[in-house]
Length: 279
Length: 279
Image (cartoon, rainbow over all chains, first blue to last red; front, side, top):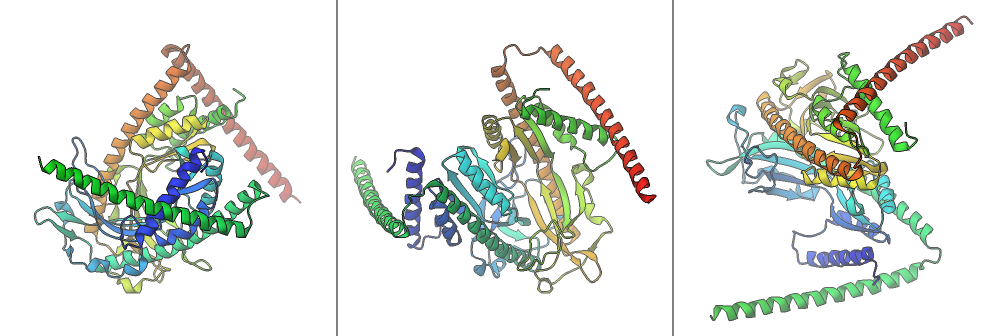
Protein backbone atom coordinates (compact mmCIF):
# COMPACT_ATOMS: atom_id res chain seq x y z
CA UNK A 1 0.00 0.00 0.00
CA UNK A 2 1.23 3.49 -0.84
CA UNK A 3 2.28 5.70 2.06
CA UNK A 4 0.22 8.53 0.59
CA UNK A 5 -2.52 9.52 3.04
CA UNK A 6 -5.30 9.73 0.40
CA UNK A 7 -4.45 6.25 -0.90
CA UNK A 8 -4.45 4.91 2.65
CA UNK A 9 -7.84 6.45 3.44
CA UNK A 10 -9.24 5.21 0.14
CA UNK A 11 -8.06 1.66 0.90
CA UNK A 12 -9.73 1.77 4.33
CA UNK A 13 -12.97 3.10 2.89
CA UNK A 14 -13.06 0.46 0.11
CA UNK A 15 -12.42 -2.22 2.72
CA UNK A 16 -15.30 -0.85 4.78
CA UNK A 17 -17.58 -0.87 1.73
CA UNK A 18 -16.62 -4.49 0.96
CA UNK A 19 -17.29 -5.37 4.61
CA UNK A 20 -20.73 -3.72 4.53
CA UNK A 21 -21.58 -5.43 1.25
CA UNK A 22 -20.65 -8.84 2.64
CA UNK A 23 -22.61 -7.95 5.80
CA UNK A 24 -25.64 -6.98 3.73
CA UNK A 25 -25.93 -10.64 2.72
CA UNK A 26 -26.73 -11.31 6.39
CA UNK A 27 -30.04 -9.56 5.64
CA UNK A 28 -29.30 -6.64 7.96
CA UNK A 29 -31.36 -3.74 6.55
CA UNK A 30 -29.50 -1.07 8.49
CA UNK A 31 -26.01 -0.02 7.46
CA UNK A 32 -26.37 -1.58 4.04
CA UNK A 33 -25.53 0.22 0.80
CA UNK A 34 -28.39 1.16 -1.56
CA UNK A 35 -28.24 -1.18 -4.54
CA UNK A 36 -28.99 1.60 -7.03
CA UNK A 37 -25.79 3.38 -5.96
CA UNK A 38 -23.43 0.44 -6.53
CA UNK A 39 -22.73 0.95 -10.26
CA UNK A 40 -21.91 4.66 -9.93
CA UNK A 41 -19.83 3.95 -6.81
CA UNK A 42 -17.82 1.38 -8.77
CA UNK A 43 -17.17 3.91 -11.53
CA UNK A 44 -16.10 6.63 -9.09
CA UNK A 45 -13.93 4.30 -7.04
CA UNK A 46 -12.17 3.08 -10.20
CA UNK A 47 -10.73 6.63 -10.44
CA UNK A 48 -7.39 6.83 -8.65
CA UNK A 49 -8.16 10.25 -7.18
CA UNK A 50 -11.74 9.71 -5.91
CA UNK A 51 -13.51 7.59 -3.32
CA UNK A 52 -17.19 7.55 -2.24
CA UNK A 53 -17.57 8.27 1.48
CA UNK A 54 -21.37 8.05 1.76
CA UNK A 55 -24.39 7.53 -0.44
CA UNK A 56 -28.17 7.39 -0.44
CA UNK A 57 -29.99 6.49 -3.64
CA UNK A 58 -33.12 8.39 -2.60
CA UNK A 59 -35.86 7.57 -0.13
CA UNK A 60 -39.29 8.25 1.26
CA UNK A 61 -39.59 8.61 5.01
CA UNK A 62 -42.07 9.62 7.69
CA UNK A 63 -40.39 11.38 10.59
CA UNK A 64 -41.65 12.33 14.04
CA UNK A 65 -39.90 15.46 15.34
CA UNK A 66 -38.17 15.31 18.73
CA UNK A 67 -39.05 17.48 21.74
CA UNK A 68 -38.81 21.01 20.48
CA UNK A 69 -38.68 23.44 23.36
CA UNK A 70 -35.15 24.69 24.08
CA UNK A 71 -34.30 27.29 26.76
CA UNK A 72 -35.10 30.29 24.60
CA UNK A 73 -36.61 28.99 21.36
CA UNK A 74 -38.43 26.24 19.49
CA UNK A 75 -36.34 23.85 17.38
CA UNK A 76 -37.64 22.99 13.93
CA UNK A 77 -37.58 19.42 12.63
CA UNK A 78 -35.50 18.34 15.65
CA UNK A 79 -33.60 15.11 15.03
CA UNK A 80 -32.55 14.66 18.66
CA UNK A 81 -34.62 14.45 21.84
CA UNK A 82 -36.86 11.59 20.82
CA UNK A 83 -37.10 12.39 17.11
CA UNK A 84 -37.52 9.14 15.17
CA UNK A 85 -38.39 7.63 11.82
CA UNK A 86 -41.81 6.00 11.69
CA UNK A 87 -41.27 4.68 8.16
CA UNK A 88 -38.38 4.56 5.66
CA UNK A 89 -38.09 3.00 2.21
CA UNK A 90 -35.50 3.28 -0.56
CA UNK A 91 -37.55 1.00 -2.82
CA UNK A 92 -40.39 2.57 -4.77
CA UNK A 93 -41.97 -0.86 -5.29
CA UNK A 94 -42.75 -1.16 -1.57
CA UNK A 95 -44.33 2.29 -1.26
CA UNK A 96 -47.91 1.33 -2.12
CA UNK A 97 -50.32 1.82 0.79
CA UNK A 98 -47.65 2.76 3.38
CA UNK A 99 -50.19 5.06 5.05
CA UNK A 100 -52.48 2.17 5.99
CA UNK A 101 -50.14 0.92 8.73
CA UNK A 102 -51.95 0.69 12.09
CA UNK A 103 -49.46 3.09 13.71
CA UNK A 104 -51.20 5.97 11.90
CA UNK A 105 -54.48 7.30 13.31
CA UNK A 106 -56.60 9.72 11.31
CA UNK A 107 -58.47 12.66 12.78
CA UNK A 108 -59.48 16.20 11.91
CA UNK A 109 -57.34 18.61 13.95
CA UNK A 110 -58.25 22.26 14.19
CA UNK A 111 -55.24 24.50 13.42
CA UNK A 112 -56.01 26.69 16.44
CA UNK A 113 -55.44 23.75 18.83
CA UNK A 114 -51.81 23.25 17.71
CA UNK A 115 -49.08 25.37 19.32
CA UNK A 116 -45.37 25.87 18.62
CA UNK A 117 -44.34 22.97 20.83
CA UNK A 118 -46.30 20.39 18.85
CA UNK A 119 -44.14 17.53 17.56
CA UNK A 120 -45.10 17.28 13.90
CA UNK A 121 -44.99 14.20 11.70
CA UNK A 122 -43.28 15.01 8.38
CA UNK A 123 -43.54 13.09 5.11
CA UNK A 124 -40.28 13.43 3.17
CA UNK A 125 -38.95 12.55 -0.24
CA UNK A 126 -35.17 12.89 -0.41
CA UNK A 127 -33.35 12.38 -3.74
CA UNK A 128 -29.93 10.86 -4.43
CA UNK A 129 -27.04 12.17 -2.35
CA UNK A 130 -23.42 11.16 -2.85
CA UNK A 131 -20.29 12.28 -1.00
CA UNK A 132 -17.01 11.79 -2.83
CA UNK A 133 -13.60 12.48 -1.30
CA UNK A 134 -11.03 13.62 -3.86
CA UNK A 135 -7.25 13.60 -3.71
CA UNK A 136 -6.97 17.31 -4.57
CA UNK A 137 -9.03 20.43 -5.23
CA UNK A 138 -8.66 20.14 -9.03
CA UNK A 139 -10.27 16.70 -9.03
CA UNK A 140 -13.01 17.96 -6.67
CA UNK A 141 -13.65 20.94 -8.98
CA UNK A 142 -13.92 18.72 -12.06
CA UNK A 143 -16.38 16.39 -10.31
CA UNK A 144 -18.38 19.33 -8.92
CA UNK A 145 -18.66 20.89 -12.39
CA UNK A 146 -19.71 17.57 -13.93
CA UNK A 147 -22.47 17.19 -11.32
CA UNK A 148 -23.69 20.79 -11.74
CA UNK A 149 -23.82 20.32 -15.53
CA UNK A 150 -26.07 17.26 -15.03
CA UNK A 151 -28.53 19.38 -13.05
CA UNK A 152 -27.31 18.49 -9.55
CA UNK A 153 -27.56 22.17 -8.67
CA UNK A 154 -27.42 21.75 -4.89
CA UNK A 155 -23.90 20.31 -5.07
CA UNK A 156 -20.95 21.84 -3.24
CA UNK A 157 -17.42 21.18 -2.10
CA UNK A 158 -16.75 20.79 1.63
CA UNK A 159 -13.33 21.30 3.12
CA UNK A 160 -11.01 18.28 2.74
CA UNK A 161 -11.98 18.12 -0.98
CA UNK A 162 -15.21 16.26 -0.33
CA UNK A 163 -17.81 16.86 -3.06
CA UNK A 164 -21.48 16.64 -1.99
CA UNK A 165 -23.53 15.76 -5.08
CA UNK A 166 -27.11 16.93 -4.50
CA UNK A 167 -30.22 17.76 -6.52
CA UNK A 168 -33.33 19.74 -5.66
CA UNK A 169 -36.32 17.38 -5.73
CA UNK A 170 -37.48 17.28 -2.12
CA UNK A 171 -40.87 16.94 -0.53
CA UNK A 172 -41.20 18.06 3.09
CA UNK A 173 -44.81 17.86 4.22
CA UNK A 174 -46.35 18.12 7.70
CA UNK A 175 -49.01 15.38 7.74
CA UNK A 176 -49.73 14.92 11.44
CA UNK A 177 -48.55 15.28 15.02
CA UNK A 178 -47.96 13.31 18.21
CA UNK A 179 -50.96 13.50 20.53
CA UNK A 180 -49.11 13.70 23.86
CA UNK A 181 -52.23 12.74 25.85
CA UNK A 182 -52.62 9.37 24.11
CA UNK A 183 -49.06 9.00 22.71
CA UNK A 184 -50.67 8.28 19.34
CA UNK A 185 -49.51 9.49 15.92
CA UNK A 186 -52.48 11.42 14.52
CA UNK A 187 -52.56 12.35 10.82
CA UNK A 188 -54.53 15.52 10.01
CA UNK A 189 -54.59 14.87 6.25
CA UNK A 190 -56.70 12.13 4.66
CA UNK A 191 -55.65 8.99 2.75
CA UNK A 192 -56.59 10.62 -0.55
CA UNK A 193 -54.06 13.41 0.03
CA UNK A 194 -51.41 10.88 1.09
CA UNK A 195 -52.09 8.95 -2.12
CA UNK A 196 -51.49 12.17 -4.09
CA UNK A 197 -48.11 12.76 -2.40
CA UNK A 198 -47.26 9.05 -2.83
CA UNK A 199 -47.87 9.43 -6.59
CA UNK A 200 -45.67 12.57 -6.49
CA UNK A 201 -42.96 10.54 -4.76
CA UNK A 202 -43.14 7.79 -7.39
CA UNK A 203 -42.67 10.41 -10.12
CA UNK A 204 -39.68 11.75 -8.16
CA UNK A 205 -38.22 8.24 -7.68
CA UNK A 206 -38.36 7.74 -11.47
CA UNK A 207 -36.89 11.16 -12.27
CA UNK A 208 -34.24 10.56 -9.61
CA UNK A 209 -33.20 7.27 -11.26
CA UNK A 210 -33.02 8.98 -14.65
CA UNK A 211 -30.78 11.70 -13.21
CA UNK A 212 -28.62 9.06 -11.50
CA UNK A 213 -28.03 7.34 -14.87
CA UNK A 214 -27.25 10.69 -16.51
CA UNK A 215 -24.76 11.47 -13.75
CA UNK A 216 -23.24 8.00 -14.05
CA UNK A 217 -22.66 8.54 -17.80
CA UNK A 218 -21.10 11.95 -17.21
CA UNK A 219 -18.80 10.67 -14.46
CA UNK A 220 -17.81 7.69 -16.63
CA UNK A 221 -16.72 10.16 -19.32
CA UNK A 222 -14.85 12.25 -16.73
CA UNK A 223 -13.06 9.20 -15.29
CA UNK A 224 -12.11 7.96 -18.77
CA UNK A 225 -10.82 11.32 -20.00
CA UNK A 226 -8.72 11.86 -16.89
CA UNK A 227 -7.36 8.31 -16.83
CA UNK A 228 -6.50 8.67 -20.55
CA UNK A 229 -4.63 11.82 -19.66
CA UNK A 230 -2.91 10.30 -16.67
CA UNK A 231 -1.19 7.25 -18.06
CA UNK A 232 -0.34 6.10 -21.55
CA UNK A 233 1.30 2.99 -20.14
CA UNK A 234 -1.74 1.97 -18.12
CA UNK A 235 -2.71 -1.64 -17.57
CA UNK A 236 -4.59 -3.65 -20.19
CA UNK A 237 -8.12 -4.94 -19.63
CA UNK A 238 -6.68 -8.36 -18.73
CA UNK A 239 -4.18 -6.87 -16.28
CA UNK A 240 -6.92 -4.79 -14.67
CA UNK A 241 -9.18 -7.84 -14.29
CA UNK A 242 -6.33 -9.79 -12.69
CA UNK A 243 -5.55 -6.90 -10.33
CA UNK A 244 -9.22 -6.46 -9.36
CA UNK A 245 -9.47 -10.20 -8.64
CA UNK A 246 -6.31 -10.07 -6.53
CA UNK A 247 -7.56 -7.00 -4.64
CA UNK A 248 -10.95 -8.68 -4.10
CA UNK A 249 -9.29 -11.75 -2.59
CA UNK A 250 -7.14 -9.53 -0.39
CA UNK A 251 -10.25 -7.75 0.86
CA UNK A 252 -12.06 -11.03 1.51
CA UNK A 253 -9.07 -12.24 3.50
CA UNK A 254 -9.00 -8.98 5.44
CA UNK A 255 -12.71 -9.30 6.25
CA UNK A 256 -12.22 -12.83 7.57
CA UNK A 257 -9.28 -11.68 9.70
CA UNK A 258 -11.42 -8.85 11.09
CA UNK A 259 -14.25 -11.24 11.99
CA UNK A 260 -11.91 -13.57 13.89
CA UNK A 261 -10.37 -10.60 15.69
CA UNK A 262 -13.88 -9.34 16.55
CA UNK A 263 -14.89 -12.75 17.93
CA UNK A 264 -11.70 -12.95 19.99
CA UNK A 265 -12.29 -9.45 21.34
CA UNK A 266 -15.82 -10.40 22.41
CA UNK A 267 -14.58 -13.62 24.05
CA UNK A 268 -11.89 -11.72 25.94
CA UNK A 269 -14.43 -9.10 27.07
CA UNK A 270 -16.72 -11.87 28.34
CA UNK A 271 -13.82 -13.44 30.26
CA UNK A 272 -12.98 -10.15 31.90
CA UNK A 273 -16.64 -9.55 32.83
CA UNK A 274 -16.84 -13.02 34.36
CA UNK A 275 -13.65 -12.40 36.33
CA UNK A 276 -15.08 -9.13 37.61
CA UNK A 277 -18.35 -10.80 38.62
CA UNK A 278 -16.46 -13.25 40.81
CA UNK A 279 -15.39 -10.42 43.12
CA UNK B 1 -8.76 51.11 -7.64
CA UNK B 2 -6.42 48.18 -7.24
CA UNK B 3 -5.63 46.19 -10.36
CA UNK B 4 -6.27 42.95 -8.44
CA UNK B 5 -9.19 41.10 -10.04
CA UNK B 6 -10.93 40.22 -6.74
CA UNK B 7 -10.82 43.85 -5.62
CA UNK B 8 -12.18 44.98 -8.96
CA UNK B 9 -15.06 42.50 -8.85
CA UNK B 10 -15.81 43.42 -5.26
CA UNK B 11 -15.96 47.11 -6.17
CA UNK B 12 -18.39 46.37 -9.02
CA UNK B 13 -20.58 44.23 -6.79
CA UNK B 14 -20.69 46.84 -4.01
CA UNK B 15 -21.58 49.48 -6.61
CA UNK B 16 -24.37 47.22 -7.84
CA UNK B 17 -25.67 46.72 -4.30
CA UNK B 18 -25.64 50.49 -3.70
CA UNK B 19 -27.46 50.96 -7.01
CA UNK B 20 -30.11 48.38 -6.06
CA UNK B 21 -30.53 49.94 -2.62
CA UNK B 22 -31.03 53.40 -4.11
CA UNK B 23 -33.41 51.80 -6.63
CA UNK B 24 -35.36 50.14 -3.83
CA UNK B 25 -36.38 53.61 -2.67
CA UNK B 26 -38.25 53.85 -5.99
CA UNK B 27 -40.64 51.29 -4.48
CA UNK B 28 -39.73 48.58 -6.96
CA UNK B 29 -40.40 45.32 -5.10
CA UNK B 30 -38.46 43.17 -7.58
CA UNK B 31 -34.67 43.22 -7.56
CA UNK B 32 -34.55 44.72 -4.10
CA UNK B 33 -32.37 43.38 -1.28
CA UNK B 34 -34.09 41.76 1.73
CA UNK B 35 -33.83 44.17 4.65
CA UNK B 36 -33.03 41.40 7.15
CA UNK B 37 -29.86 40.59 5.17
CA UNK B 38 -28.42 44.12 5.19
CA UNK B 39 -26.62 44.00 8.58
CA UNK B 40 -24.88 40.66 7.89
CA UNK B 41 -24.00 41.82 4.35
CA UNK B 42 -22.38 44.96 5.79
CA UNK B 43 -20.30 42.84 8.18
CA UNK B 44 -19.19 40.46 5.43
CA UNK B 45 -18.42 43.23 2.96
CA UNK B 46 -16.30 45.04 5.57
CA UNK B 47 -13.89 42.09 5.29
CA UNK B 48 -11.24 42.77 2.64
CA UNK B 49 -11.37 39.21 1.28
CA UNK B 50 -15.15 38.63 1.06
CA UNK B 51 -18.09 40.03 -0.86
CA UNK B 52 -21.76 38.96 -0.89
CA UNK B 53 -22.91 38.01 -4.39
CA UNK B 54 -26.54 37.09 -3.62
CA UNK B 55 -28.86 36.79 -0.67
CA UNK B 56 -32.37 35.83 0.36
CA UNK B 57 -33.43 36.29 3.97
CA UNK B 58 -36.03 33.52 3.74
CA UNK B 59 -39.46 33.40 2.14
CA UNK B 60 -42.78 31.68 1.70
CA UNK B 61 -43.96 31.10 -1.84
CA UNK B 62 -46.66 29.30 -3.79
CA UNK B 63 -45.38 27.99 -7.10
CA UNK B 64 -47.20 26.58 -10.14
CA UNK B 65 -45.04 24.04 -11.97
CA UNK B 66 -44.39 24.54 -15.70
CA UNK B 67 -45.41 22.09 -18.45
CA UNK B 68 -43.81 18.83 -17.43
CA UNK B 69 -43.76 16.42 -20.34
CA UNK B 70 -40.35 16.20 -22.04
CA UNK B 71 -39.56 13.85 -24.96
CA UNK B 72 -38.84 10.85 -22.77
CA UNK B 73 -39.72 11.80 -19.20
CA UNK B 74 -41.69 13.98 -16.81
CA UNK B 75 -39.90 16.93 -15.25
CA UNK B 76 -40.41 17.54 -11.54
CA UNK B 77 -41.04 21.04 -10.16
CA UNK B 78 -40.25 22.53 -13.59
CA UNK B 79 -39.26 26.21 -13.36
CA UNK B 80 -39.42 26.80 -17.12
CA UNK B 81 -42.24 26.26 -19.60
CA UNK B 82 -44.85 28.39 -17.90
CA UNK B 83 -43.82 27.71 -14.29
CA UNK B 84 -44.64 30.76 -12.19
CA UNK B 85 -44.97 32.11 -8.67
CA UNK B 86 -48.55 32.68 -7.56
CA UNK B 87 -47.49 34.24 -4.25
CA UNK B 88 -44.20 35.29 -2.62
CA UNK B 89 -43.46 37.02 0.67
CA UNK B 90 -40.26 37.62 2.64
CA UNK B 91 -42.18 39.29 5.45
CA UNK B 92 -43.81 37.05 8.03
CA UNK B 93 -46.11 39.89 9.10
CA UNK B 94 -47.92 39.79 5.75
CA UNK B 95 -48.44 36.03 5.73
CA UNK B 96 -51.76 35.94 7.57
CA UNK B 97 -54.64 34.64 5.40
CA UNK B 98 -52.61 34.42 2.16
CA UNK B 99 -54.72 31.41 1.13
CA UNK B 100 -57.91 33.44 0.96
CA UNK B 101 -56.87 35.21 -2.24
CA UNK B 102 -59.51 34.80 -5.00
CA UNK B 103 -56.97 33.15 -7.34
CA UNK B 104 -57.22 29.97 -5.23
CA UNK B 105 -60.25 27.68 -5.75
CA UNK B 106 -60.95 24.84 -3.34
CA UNK B 107 -62.20 21.42 -4.37
CA UNK B 108 -61.87 17.78 -3.41
CA UNK B 109 -59.77 16.03 -6.06
CA UNK B 110 -59.60 12.26 -6.19
CA UNK B 111 -55.98 11.03 -6.35
CA UNK B 112 -56.86 8.59 -9.13
CA UNK B 113 -57.83 11.47 -11.48
CA UNK B 114 -54.35 13.04 -11.36
CA UNK B 115 -51.68 11.74 -13.73
CA UNK B 116 -47.94 12.37 -14.07
CA UNK B 117 -48.41 15.35 -16.37
CA UNK B 118 -50.43 17.33 -13.82
CA UNK B 119 -48.93 20.74 -13.04
CA UNK B 120 -48.89 20.84 -9.25
CA UNK B 121 -49.09 23.91 -7.05
CA UNK B 122 -46.40 23.78 -4.34
CA UNK B 123 -46.31 25.68 -1.05
CA UNK B 124 -42.69 26.38 -0.08
CA UNK B 125 -40.81 27.74 2.88
CA UNK B 126 -37.20 28.52 2.00
CA UNK B 127 -34.78 29.69 4.73
CA UNK B 128 -31.90 32.17 4.53
CA UNK B 129 -29.43 31.66 1.70
CA UNK B 130 -26.27 33.72 1.24
CA UNK B 131 -23.57 33.47 -1.44
CA UNK B 132 -20.20 34.98 -0.56
CA UNK B 133 -17.29 35.25 -2.97
CA UNK B 134 -13.92 35.01 -1.25
CA UNK B 135 -10.49 36.14 -2.42
CA UNK B 136 -8.90 32.72 -1.83
CA UNK B 137 -9.71 29.16 -0.75
CA UNK B 138 -8.42 29.70 2.81
CA UNK B 139 -10.91 32.51 3.39
CA UNK B 140 -13.69 30.41 1.82
CA UNK B 141 -12.79 27.47 4.09
CA UNK B 142 -12.85 29.64 7.21
CA UNK B 143 -16.26 31.09 6.29
CA UNK B 144 -17.63 27.64 5.38
CA UNK B 145 -16.48 26.21 8.73
CA UNK B 146 -18.00 29.15 10.63
CA UNK B 147 -21.35 28.59 8.89
CA UNK B 148 -21.31 24.82 9.48
CA UNK B 149 -20.54 25.37 13.17
CA UNK B 150 -23.62 27.62 13.42
CA UNK B 151 -25.81 24.78 12.10
CA UNK B 152 -25.88 25.85 8.43
CA UNK B 153 -25.29 22.21 7.52
CA UNK B 154 -26.29 22.51 3.85
CA UNK B 155 -23.44 24.92 3.11
CA UNK B 156 -20.78 24.24 0.51
CA UNK B 157 -18.05 25.86 -1.53
CA UNK B 158 -18.55 26.29 -5.27
CA UNK B 159 -15.68 26.74 -7.64
CA UNK B 160 -14.32 30.31 -7.79
CA UNK B 161 -14.25 30.32 -3.94
CA UNK B 162 -17.93 31.13 -3.61
CA UNK B 163 -19.41 29.90 -0.32
CA UNK B 164 -23.11 29.00 -0.34
CA UNK B 165 -24.42 29.38 3.24
CA UNK B 166 -27.52 27.19 3.59
CA UNK B 167 -29.58 25.58 6.33
CA UNK B 168 -32.09 22.75 6.26
CA UNK B 169 -35.50 24.11 7.25
CA UNK B 170 -37.59 23.72 4.11
CA UNK B 171 -41.22 23.00 3.50
CA UNK B 172 -42.17 21.67 0.06
CA UNK B 173 -45.84 20.78 -0.03
CA UNK B 174 -48.13 19.94 -2.98
CA UNK B 175 -51.36 21.80 -2.19
CA UNK B 176 -53.15 21.87 -5.53
CA UNK B 177 -52.95 21.71 -9.32
CA UNK B 178 -53.83 23.62 -12.48
CA UNK B 179 -57.16 22.48 -13.90
CA UNK B 180 -56.30 22.69 -17.62
CA UNK B 181 -59.97 22.64 -18.68
CA UNK B 182 -60.85 25.80 -16.74
CA UNK B 183 -57.32 27.24 -16.33
CA UNK B 184 -58.08 27.59 -12.62
CA UNK B 185 -55.75 26.92 -9.70
CA UNK B 186 -57.54 24.27 -7.63
CA UNK B 187 -56.34 23.52 -4.09
CA UNK B 188 -57.02 19.96 -2.89
CA UNK B 189 -56.24 20.71 0.76
CA UNK B 190 -58.54 22.78 2.98
CA UNK B 191 -57.98 26.17 4.64
CA UNK B 192 -57.49 24.48 8.03
CA UNK B 193 -54.50 22.52 6.67
CA UNK B 194 -53.10 25.67 5.04
CA UNK B 195 -53.41 27.45 8.39
CA UNK B 196 -51.39 24.62 9.98
CA UNK B 197 -48.57 24.97 7.43
CA UNK B 198 -48.75 28.77 7.75
CA UNK B 199 -48.19 28.39 11.52
CA UNK B 200 -45.29 26.03 10.72
CA UNK B 201 -43.85 28.68 8.39
CA UNK B 202 -44.11 31.37 11.08
CA UNK B 203 -42.18 29.11 13.48
CA UNK B 204 -39.58 28.63 10.73
CA UNK B 205 -39.38 32.38 10.02
CA UNK B 206 -38.64 32.98 13.71
CA UNK B 207 -36.08 30.16 13.95
CA UNK B 208 -34.54 31.41 10.69
CA UNK B 209 -34.10 34.93 12.14
CA UNK B 210 -32.53 33.48 15.28
CA UNK B 211 -30.05 31.48 13.17
CA UNK B 212 -29.32 34.58 11.05
CA UNK B 213 -28.37 36.52 14.19
CA UNK B 214 -26.23 33.62 15.43
CA UNK B 215 -24.46 33.48 12.06
CA UNK B 216 -24.00 37.26 12.09
CA UNK B 217 -22.30 37.08 15.51
CA UNK B 218 -20.02 34.25 14.38
CA UNK B 219 -19.05 36.04 11.16
CA UNK B 220 -18.41 39.26 13.10
CA UNK B 221 -15.97 37.33 15.29
CA UNK B 222 -14.34 35.78 12.21
CA UNK B 223 -13.98 39.15 10.47
CA UNK B 224 -12.52 40.76 13.61
CA UNK B 225 -10.02 38.00 14.30
CA UNK B 226 -8.77 37.95 10.70
CA UNK B 227 -8.59 41.75 10.43
CA UNK B 228 -6.69 41.85 13.73
CA UNK B 229 -4.27 39.38 12.25
CA UNK B 230 -4.00 41.22 8.92
CA UNK B 231 -3.01 44.72 9.89
CA UNK B 232 -1.66 46.28 13.03
CA UNK B 233 -1.55 49.67 11.35
CA UNK B 234 -5.19 49.62 10.32
CA UNK B 235 -7.31 52.75 10.19
CA UNK B 236 -8.95 54.23 13.28
CA UNK B 237 -12.73 54.41 13.70
CA UNK B 238 -12.66 58.05 12.55
CA UNK B 239 -10.53 57.24 9.48
CA UNK B 240 -12.85 54.37 8.60
CA UNK B 241 -15.94 56.61 8.88
CA UNK B 242 -14.29 59.22 6.67
CA UNK B 243 -13.32 56.59 4.10
CA UNK B 244 -16.84 55.03 4.09
CA UNK B 245 -18.35 58.51 3.58
CA UNK B 246 -15.93 59.19 0.71
CA UNK B 247 -16.65 55.83 -0.88
CA UNK B 248 -20.40 56.39 -0.48
CA UNK B 249 -20.14 59.75 -2.29
CA UNK B 250 -18.03 58.14 -5.03
CA UNK B 251 -20.70 55.45 -5.48
CA UNK B 252 -23.51 58.04 -5.58
CA UNK B 253 -21.58 59.94 -8.25
CA UNK B 254 -21.02 56.74 -10.22
CA UNK B 255 -24.75 55.91 -10.07
CA UNK B 256 -25.63 59.38 -11.40
CA UNK B 257 -23.10 59.02 -14.20
CA UNK B 258 -24.56 55.64 -15.14
CA UNK B 259 -28.09 57.07 -15.25
CA UNK B 260 -27.02 59.89 -17.59
CA UNK B 261 -25.10 57.42 -19.79
CA UNK B 262 -28.18 55.16 -19.87
CA UNK B 263 -30.43 58.07 -20.92
CA UNK B 264 -27.97 59.09 -23.63
CA UNK B 265 -27.75 55.53 -24.89
CA UNK B 266 -31.56 55.37 -25.15
CA UNK B 267 -31.70 58.71 -26.94
CA UNK B 268 -29.04 57.62 -29.42
CA UNK B 269 -30.83 54.31 -30.04
CA UNK B 270 -34.06 56.23 -30.75
CA UNK B 271 -32.22 58.51 -33.20
CA UNK B 272 -30.79 55.55 -35.06
CA UNK B 273 -34.20 53.85 -35.21
CA UNK B 274 -35.73 57.06 -36.60
CA UNK B 275 -32.98 57.30 -39.20
CA UNK B 276 -33.60 53.70 -40.22
CA UNK B 277 -37.35 54.28 -40.47
CA UNK B 278 -36.79 57.08 -42.98
CA UNK B 279 -35.42 54.57 -45.50
